[in-house]
Image (cartoon, rainbow, N blue to C red; front, side):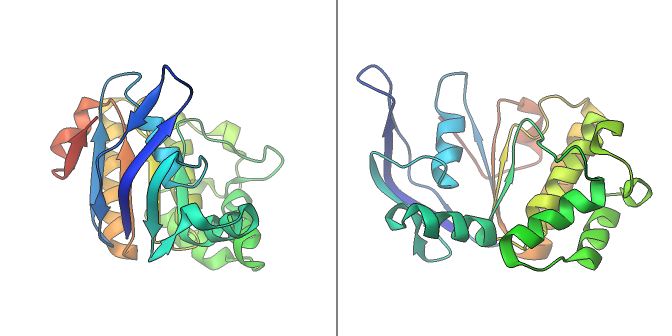
Length: 208
């Protein structure tokens, strides 16, 4: 689960954001929308501990991550927060399966190969395990990113514009899979997007 309180961030005198409090229980989803420049990505980076707030708290699984040192925050993020970014970043020399397994090894020191295979199968990628990510379509790469984000069964899954570059069919497919897997793994899911197509899929939503 995730809870925020009185969260704000400033890029300087001319760009200060104050965000509404949010609370997303385990297994539930929240859609955050808003026009360009409203702070959607800034908020997502605050929720994931990639930015430090000017004021306020971000509580993930009963831990206030704003009070953690950088080292402890990195360790906590690896175990408890999954990220699906707008741009998928993969290790080019590794295949699809190895990229997902790598995320488990970095967080736990163990290679969760069987779990990675299971996740990729759930995401209909079982025929692409040994391909390079560059050989996949954008929609398939997004699904690999989802598998990588879920491999450690995080308490919080953050997705930044996960469907913006997808056609209607793949956009609804990826969004539906995110919602389904969040419930299955008991993960709080937060999506930030300007993609209006997702409003019909996620009833719990706020607009910045």
